[in-house]
Length: 237
Image 1: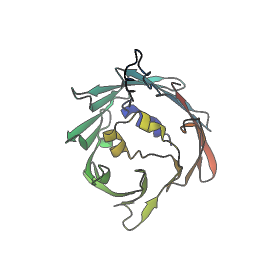
Image 2 (image 1 turned 135 degrees about the vertical axis):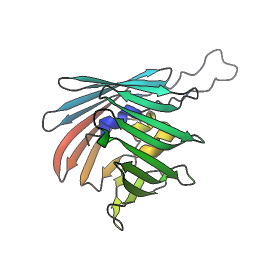
Image 3 (image 1 turned 90 degrees about the vertical axis):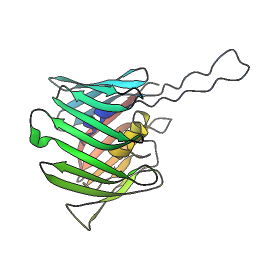
Image 4 (image 1 turned 60 degrees about the vertical axis):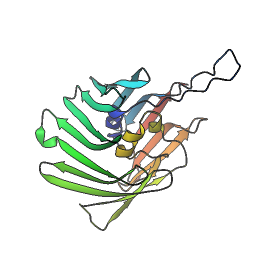
């Protein structure tokens, strides 16, 4: 589950504006409910904090604080407010290519170790969700085919590493906090659906505590029945 903090490095804020009340001198307040911080505390004592910083309703920077270090990721947009790249003081970069407002390619560039760099090409179904991904790294391909439920959660996929084996995940019926900050395009390629994972094909089990809006405030992660980490989510209100 340590990769949850890397996922935050490519987030884009979603803001919902209210409508003006007709014939009223006042406007309804803007709904500024946002995800601001994620803290992940591991059983081995490691703690990592990700603070999400916004500018003009877009995620502009992620500040990741570890025990003895601080890392930054800066997010870059085009004139249409589409995320086109993310650069990190980890000395790596992610680039996105679009077609008809769908991301067709993601390039991860590790400037310290080229063998860790990879490219993923995406194919979509009629609901604009990824039906197939093809990852290429050092000349090798990894192909995955995905199946969804009605809430756009990936309930299973088949990998070319294990052809014929369907790997499954189950979900709760509450709100996924990452949907507050991902655009639809990023949600699609990062396989972020409407709900939260409770059991994965990697022998992970998750339990949650929720706020009155139905979003998790605390997530407890078990791997093969053993406590691995506790994740807390902090929101703007």
